[in-house]
Image 1 (spheres, rainbow, N blue to C red):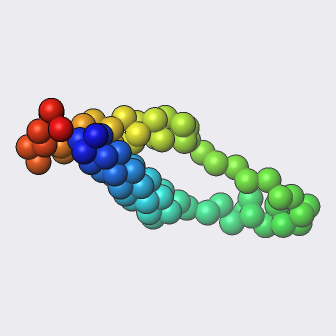
Image 2 (image 1 turned 180 degrees about the horizontal axis):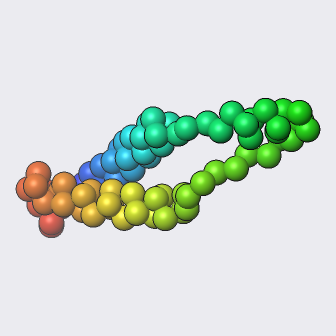
Image 3 (image 1 turned 180 degrees about the vertical axis):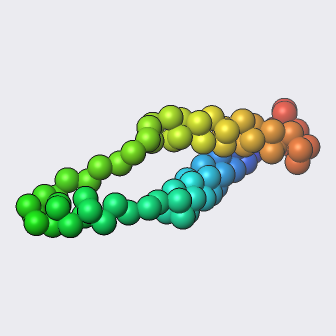
Length: 82
């Protein structure tokens, strides 16, 4: 049970950290299109257009987080019988 708790906590922390860092990275590389913004404000459109496949990034970071979290209890030498 202790091993599972360490896995679960480390997975949530790692996944949150990866999502936060990906958000920072995407914000950093974002370049707004002023012409599109001007035409959108003229028609009062409330549509948000996101480029890229966000499901792929979420799935990839969930898999990466789970993989790293799997090895954390092993590195901490948690006894398997407890």
